[in-house]
Image 1 (spheres, helix red, strand yellow):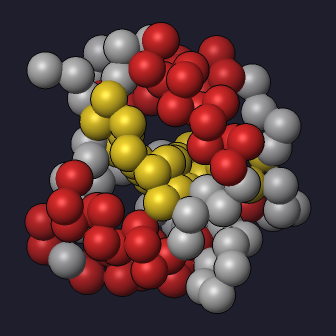
Image 2 (tube, rainbow, N blue to C red; image 1 turned 90 degrees about the horizontal axis):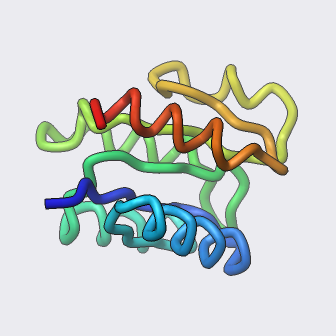
Amino acid sequence: MAHKIMIVDDDPHIVKYMTDFLADSGYATCSAPDVAEALEVLKREKPDLITLDLEMPNEWGPRFYRKMVKEEAFKNTPVIVISGLSGIHLAIHGAVASFKKPFDPHKLLETIKATLGD
């Protein structure tokens, strides 16, 4: 069974691009455009890895991360930050990697594969 990656980003173009790219690379995906929906999708889909934008409407990515790691079932779920903000490597200390938009999809894929052991 393919690993499942959750894409949390409010930009529908980024979500579509990443969904297509990850599907072509053999991964199942799910997505959410904001923190509230991401928490619901997280519990329903139980992804193996999350890509997380930092700047979204209503609440920011770091708030999602703080809520996520309080849940026992998800506290060890790896997170890769993908954001256009500066200093993103400092935003979430538990992130396995940080990529600045625009990002190199092949480097992202390498990081995903290394993180999931694929």
